[in-house]
Image 1: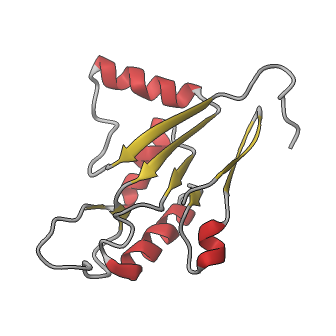
Image 2: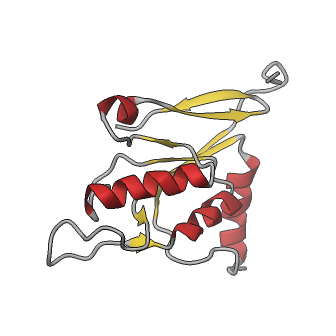
Amino acid sequence: MIYNAEKRDISIAVGGDAMITRRMQSFTEPKFLELIEILRAADVSVVNLEMLFHDYESSWQWSGATYTRSDPRNLEELKWMGINAVTTANNHSFDFSEGGFLTTLEHCKEVDLPQAGGGRDIDEARAPAYVDSPMGRLAIMSA
């Protein structure tokens, strides 16, 4: 891939925790759409995936708490918003046990959404996610 890095600096939008439990495309509030435009305008946009995406294939880790999950199809909503990659190393990664976490990673792979911070072993978890943009390649780390 030939990059245009000589033309300008790469722009990066970094968001906090993403908890997407429904379709985002139906929202038309002006301030929300302004945020979407910021994410889309950046060469690379990254958020922390503060929840899991699965169809309850795995049970929750502990009883007595509330855990958030979403239909795996909602990962496409993140992409619609302009998100190019997600981080997955956080305190909710194992809310639905190892199975819920690994299922989420598989769903990210299925929709071509790079993730950093998770994996089947320590080497995968430590590996960066790479995002290619017209302005260059960005490595994303999550710990």
